[in-house]
Amino acid sequence: MGAAAGGAEEDGMSEKLIGVKQAWAKAGRLLTGKADEGYEARLPPGQRLVTNWPVLDLGVQPDVPTASWRLEVDGAVTTPMTLDWAAFMALPQVEDVSDIHCVTQWSRYDNRWQGVSTATILNAVQPLPRAAHVILHGFDGYTTNVSLDLFAEADCLLAHSHDGAPLSREHGGPVRAIIPRYYFWKSAKWLKRIEFVAEDAPGFWEVRGYHNVGDPWLEQRYS
Ligand SMILES: Nc1nc2c(c(=O)[nH]1)N[C@H]1C(S)=C(S)[C@@H](COP(=O)(O)O)O[C@H]1N2
Ligand SMILES: [Mo]
Image 1 (cartoon, protein in one colour):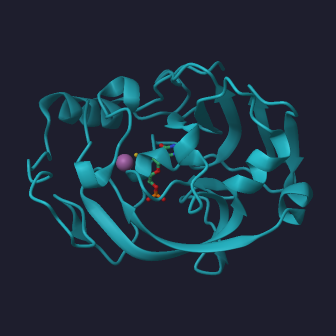
Image 2: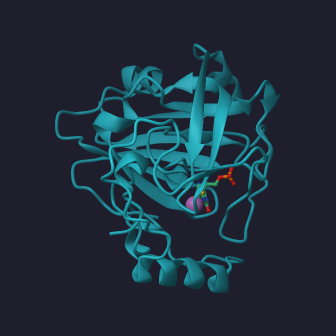
C-alpha cells in the first residue's frame, strides 16, 4: 500500500460505521464553535471527561502476535529499518503521561504510556532533509498523517503498554503510536509501518472529512 489513504474496501471493515462518521464530518456535527473563547482549562472545547476507555476501530481488530510483529520504518530516510519484537524492546524505553482527546467528544486524563520515544526512531533512521511528513500505517489498512515536527515532539511515542500492562488488542496492541497533542485518530493502532514523505498525504479519516491537522485546542475536528 502506498502513502495514500487505506481504502474502505479492506476485508471486514464496517462500511456502515465509516459512512456515518464521514457524514458527520461533512455536516460539521459535534462542532461547538467554542474554540475561540480562550479556554485555559485542561478539557478542550466541546469535550467531556470519561473514566472508561472507549474502543474505536473500522470493524476489524487485527490479531498480531509479537512473534510475527514487524515494524517497518522507511521512505525519505538515510537508514530504513525493520524492527522485530526483540529489537524494538531492546531500544531505550520511556514513560509518558498524557490526556486523550477523541474527536467524538470524549477525553480521558492521565494515560501512562510505556514504549519507545519517536526521537529514538528518528535518531536511528535519520530522515532526509526533504522529509516533512509522516504516514502511520496500521495492520488493518488504516493510515493517518502528521507533520514531522509534530511526530518529533517529546511526548510522542510508540507505546506497547498502558498503565503498566501490555496494550490490549482492542486498543492497538502490540504497538500503537501516541501523538497526544492531536485528536486521538492520529494515534494509529496496530502500528505496522512508519513512512517518511516529502509531500503530505491525507490518511483514512483525513480523506473522509476529518481535519488534516486535528488540534483539539483549536477544535480542528473537520476540514
Ligand atoms: N489502525 C487504526 N488506528 C486507529 C483507528 C483505526 O481504526 N485503526 N482509529 C482511530 C480513532 S478514530 C480513534 S478515536 C482511536 C481509538 O483508540 P482506542 O480504541 O484505543 O480508544 O484510534 C485511532 N487509531
Ligand atoms: Mo476517533
